[in-house]
Length: 436
Image (cartoon, rainbow, N blue to C red; front, side, top):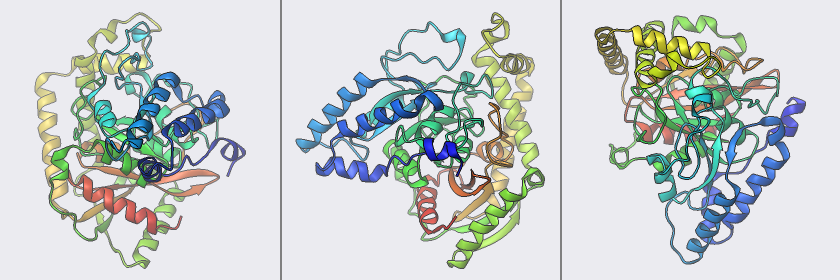
């Protein structure tokens, strides 16, 4: 572990234990919130994960949750648990700036985003807003640093969400994923992430990037913590899906894009898969039935078309108000015809159907998260291993799976669309059985 990691990485504790302690009366939610802000005072100056913490608001919420617990009025599975919110998601009373100068003077949100309202309904305490990249794109990046090595990126676009959890400033955080922005930062920061099936959770009150893919997910110190956060906002229609099969069949997927992976990444996957196979899990290998390169090309075209329509004004924004890369994406998107957009959606839908029809409902895809560990500098990292599985619509979990040169690596587990509860259960069990 690097010197940075020894100082800045800290386990904030298990989400389920916190909720159970609050519900039983053994833990005061005020103490949980105060611990988060005390840790923030210790490390935020270096990690720089917060856009706007809300100390007064969080403490007021915590006092209310404590009083409710003492009266036996438990809101839900996250009662009293603190959570940070990525700053593309509205929180009533706080401005949603999306790390863009074009929103520097925006008024505070009047209402919570639907997902924030769901979390309050589940009893969560909202700590404030975490840094994101500009409009949740690849650039501009916030000042946030990776707690394992302050010279490296925490990933994007949920940079602040991952970094503040990895450094112990919150046990949970909300992120969003359009390409790889929950699972990649979770992997780079050595923690857990869970992205539900595409659009499973309402995106009302979320600044759009590409609405066809913008999906809200959770980040926790372990995969089980991220899953616990997801269960607090899991929509009722997913809870009514068929019963979870007893055990998954693990499919170690191969695709030509893996030629970009560092040897250490592939070795880490082999090590953890060998452990699962040795423990009696059904493991097989298969080639991807669709080209990940082709999937990503359609994903990129759809994203550019939609960001162009969502934010056309950015094409002509004053110099310095928008990064050139985002300006280019908007301009390219505006130049894409409706026919090409519709055709690309149709082609991608066909590839998605073909991909998942090749596998059974108890298959879990195993694939690296990124070609290597978090790179140096403030690039957000390479999305080529994550974006295709995101575009293929199903739930994805990130699980830490080893270290290289003191930096964490991750493995992503993916299942067919709608199998969110199954993947959540399987991922937690696989994590508990893993030796990394």
